[in-house]
Image (cartoon, rainbow, N blue to C red):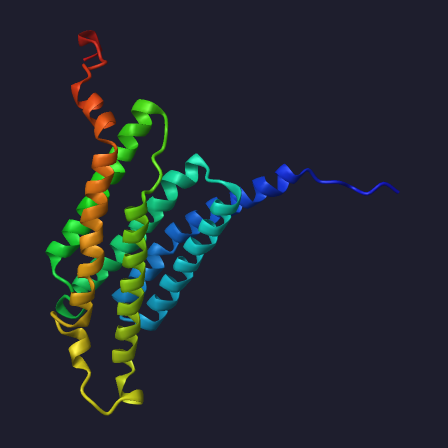
Length: 218
């Protein structure tokens, strides 16, 4: 009886689809994460965020081994932005605000600008711009600081069972979470400037190109 043979490309295709499914799963975890924060179930929020971070790690490993699809180039950074944006919004509203609104606006504003430019470049040139080195540093720092912040909030939530000291400094508006957030804030700004600088020629061409529509299309 002949043995069934499978083409290696089928396995690669399966892995590529798995990476994309993991990216979609990370996006779908955003609402449960925000609901956990809304009802102050911080331990559950930490678990959900941890699962999302694991999906990010796994699809990154698959992409490095098998290559990156156009879908992954665009959707993977977008999934990270949605997850991080949700966490920042939750932190700025939790216990009267653990981080100031201007930090959140700066970080999310940068993400809107970069994502908007990515969409414009796709429409104009038909290619997706991959994340840069500083962009990856930015994402890693955001994930690390948010995870650490959630761990601190869980410790504060269960403080009676592990500490006899006053640990309310954890939820102070200018406590450890506030100061830790300066690292991803700086990297966010630096990576945004890098993105614009690296794509300055393409951006300049778009800004100086004439309109492509006709008057009778109006």
